[in-house]
Length: 232
Image (cartoon, rainbow, N blue to C red):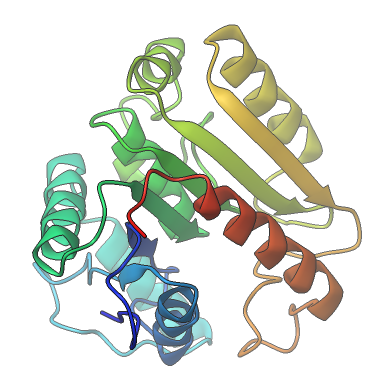
């Protein structure tokens, strides 16, 4: 959890962790959002299986991350998001609610938005939303036509960011995602970075980090957050 130093939080932003859990980089994301004026809260979604799992960006960390991911439930994800939003309210944050998720976290944000109202979801290379592929996306993924219609009914706006070289999300899937949102009248903006890889926002992973794409992506994220209902 991170909050502004010199003002009440303008709104609450739930930060959806990567596969590797609440890493030091996720904590830095919270600090960056707090510096921009928000109450930023990163739930440890794995807590029911492993309290504050410390996973490395390696094969062992990836294997353990998928094991823990396989045990998440949709109800648990929504409950933890609601608890985070409640914590923001207790800190005096404005009424605005956003979920900014990275990779797995992007999936969790989309999933949550189909089940409860959020003003904004930012999904940064969040996979498995249309075609499934993980236990959490079975027996059907979150963005079925009905899921997209629920998001529209909640009034949620979606900002999607992806790299053109992403191994998890094909350009075909990205286009179909836009079509699904369009058909359901979900307000959305999808932005692609042709040369960027999966995980391009994380500077702690130099093999995939793309400074130019990350800088532009953060501008879009902060612009979208600035449109939230807020208090001055």
